Length: 133
Image (cartoon, rainbow, N blue to C red; front, side, top):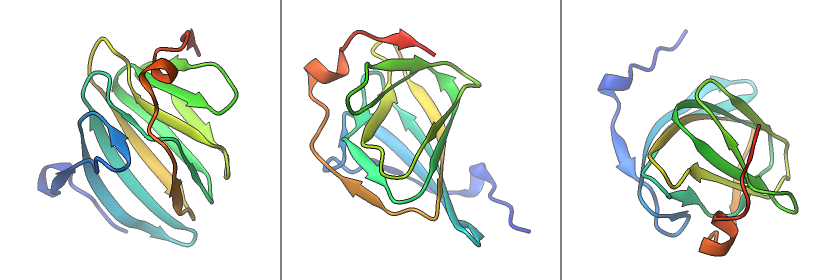
């Protein structure tokens, strides 16, 4: 059994090469070994978001504060609220971050996954017509 106590973990600023805007990341690496699972608590400032990216394994996003804006390539921009869970399949090109009106925090669970990063999400892509759920 492992316990990750948030108050004792270091956080770091997001990488400007893979995020637009400011966010803070708290890593809970190697939360499980089989399959390898890494967990990240990411606190985004209003309007901040990841670049387009994909994962080789599934990713789960649990929204714990604010409103998450996200998009799968080829689909409309959507929003998720506190308590919502977003399940992203391996290979799905996507982005996620805070809605423009305020900060957002999610817990990302990456299962047996490595991440491939792509271009930043443009302002035009980010402000696409949002849909709930």
